Length: 480
Ligand code: GLC
Image 1 (cartoon, rainbow, N blue to C red):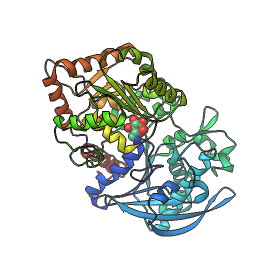
Image 2 (image 1 turned 90 degrees about the horizontal axis):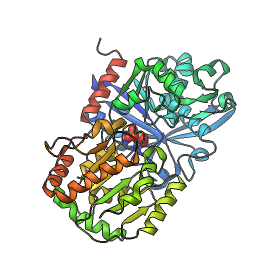
Image 3 (image 1 turned 180 degrees about the horizontal axis):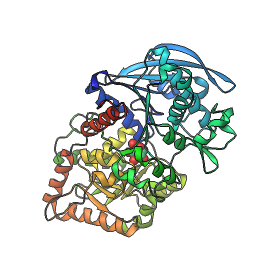
Image 4 (image 1 turned 180 degrees about the vertical axis):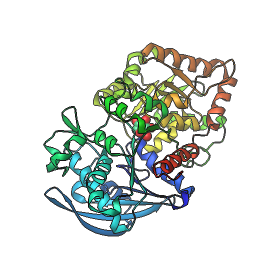
């Protein structure tokens, strides 16, 4: 069946082209995993100016005009092949020549244009997929336009099924009603599709219109049915629970491979190979070169749902121990300043790198000992799996995909692959971190065995790609 299945992934970012977080990892690797199974998987993202600058030799495919309400906008299509997968890029300088991917005053209009352009592109590239797989609010309008408009006007769109994936329910695409016809080009009779809580909510519209809704771990799929985790959407999630599934993400185990990773100071096969990386990292970061002092690392967006308020509450107490703390990431200015100040006050113990730096992140995964991820909510989380692959032991809160991937280490039986705590509580996190530090310091052999075990866990896409294939088959009724 996989051999004639055609799937188009629509997203706002994809590695290696444009990335601000885990969504880019997924779109950069899941289609390639399915391609290996014989699926004709393709991807489309915007042609951001940063992508243009990095890849000036993309193939030009065609151009046409996209109509968005009263606007008529140029749309160019470029393409390239990466890891066997064809990537299309939607070109329009007015919308995508911006310093950042998101956070522009007209994001709603930019992604409405993108969504229409994706659907208008299909006849021009002669590719009508069996399934369009959309991701998060930026591509939510694709499913809404397809189901409410395109397939009523053109029979070619009729058989296409839509899968929508929620990578993080905190970001829903919420706008005022005035935007409905002027920007989204939706007539008043379609208002009820996107209307939620007195506003236009694109994620709600996608949930209503899609054939199947997925999210990125089984535990998060359950959590978003509750008020605590749904960022206000639990009524809708519950109403459509019959079409919702949670499938855990994999990671690209070729890209994240300590045996081959050129970003590391020294490639390694076994935990013993981490030491060289650790010393080189300490040197580069200006921390004391101390082979026996554990490095606790965080690589994260500096936003509150990542659990940073737990860290800010107890970090001073934690730093009384013989440890080093390294944090890499950007985000809320309050947190950025907190960690800058923490470094100033503890120059021999703390390094805060307030940047998004993929190459440095690999050096940290390779050189650190303990990886901290105390998220308040975590749809899937990839960093805990990447850290594990580089032999850095995860300390996580039991939520979402963190719960599904990391099990508590029992030092009697050797079961488990990390350290976990249940309640969102700073003292519980501190207690758990201390357990990890004491195993590192006092039980060298057990620690080494745990690192070894972490490195060997299979976090590849193999299992999850099968789960997606089964879902695609089900939605296309191929099993009948
Ligand atoms: C978002 C989520 C993260 C998930 C990623 C990929 O970034 O916050 O938990 O791993 O998407 O699905």
